[in-house]
Structures are given as C-alpha cells and as structure tokens.
Image (tube, rainbow, N blue to C red):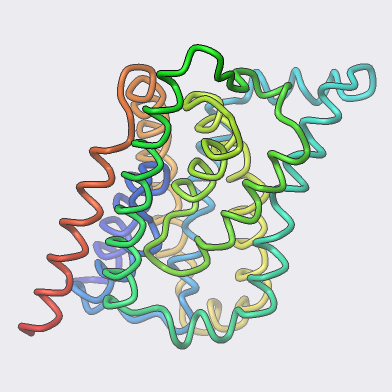
Length: 272
C-alpha cells in the first residue's frame, strides 16, 4: 500500500476522531501500526491535526470574525480570548516539558488501549454524576461561552493536560473539564472546539518548525498536505454532526465505544 493511500486513510481517521471524544492521536497510532506506516517522532500524526484546526476556523468563521471585530469594544469578548489563552497554557507548558518522554515512551497501541478504557470509564461516571446533578432544580450551569469564568477555563486547561497521553482525547478531556466546572454540554463542546485552535495549531506549528528539515529530506510534504486536506473535510463534517448529536444525547455511547475499542486493541496486540 502506497504512502499516498496511507495518508488519505489516516486523514480520514484524524478528521472523524478528532472531535468525537475517542482520541484522534490514539486512533492514528493504532491505524499507523496496522498500515505499517512509520513516522519518527509522531510528526505526521501531529501535523495533520492542522486539518481539524482549519475545519474549526471555517465552521465558526462568522463568529470568529465578529469576535475579532468586537474585541476592542467588548469586555466579554476580551474575557473570551483570555479564557482560551488560560485554558491553552497548562497543556502547552507540560507538553513542551515532557515532549521527548511522551513521543518515545507513550506512542504505542497498549498505551492507547489503556487510555481508551480508563477514559471511557471516567466519561461514563461524569455523565452519571451530571445526570444526578441536573435532576436537582437548584443546580445551575453556564450556558453561554461569554459567561465562562477564568476559573472554569483554568480547570478545563488542567484537565486537557491528560490528553498528552495518547488515547485520552483532547476534546474529551476538555469537555469533561467543562462539565465538571459547571458548563452545560453544548457550551463545553463549543469551548472545546475553540480551544482546539490554539492547542492543535500550536502543536502543529511547533512540530513543523522542529522537523522541517526531516520532512523535506524524506519527501513527506505531499503526504502531509494530502492527509491535512482529507482531515479538514472529514473534521468539518464531524463538527456539524457532533453539535447536532449533543443537542439531544449525552456522551455515554462514546464511553462504551472507548472501552470496547480498548479491549479490542489489547486482544489484537496480544495475538499478533
């Protein structure tokens, strides 16, 4: 199987899984192993996330332009940008500090399997806790992005650190952080989408600059471009679907999928 076809397949995997609480990086590691697609340092898996970032920017382009235009005049808008920065910092600092350990020690199917299972159990318990909380009439939730507090943003940022472990899911961890800090499901999901812009965008630019010579020498630029383009298309479709889904469903189906997928990966690794 050619590297070009591999890039297309991995681009589809990235786009579908990035925002579905099931870990795009984890699925890319497993898919790359199945396809025997080798990429030193996880560069390909990180860089094609740019497609997902561009999908978020395009999907929310009208709102983003409006927020940029209102920044100078609106205190709420300035707080929104500040909250994104606050939520972005914990994972960015931790990721830079432990990058070598993460890429060399944790990029494996077994790590992904364990993370999927543990994350699935946590997601189920958070949804169960939220179901009980929402049954209490006096319990209130933040239902608008502009009403998210800096404390809530910081909690989301710290929970996003766990997504540095492959299989945890960046979107899943940030949404769990949002739910635990008092955001409703729709607001937590929207904040997670916006948070993807600095988080995934920053990781992509860092990897590109760090491995630019390697990418050029190996002729990997075309594969990266194709994988990123395919990821953009599939991620854009996934965002619209997920927003419609969360309007009427909780995330327990994703929790079940994570647990079953983790068990399947363990079985596959043990038998090969």
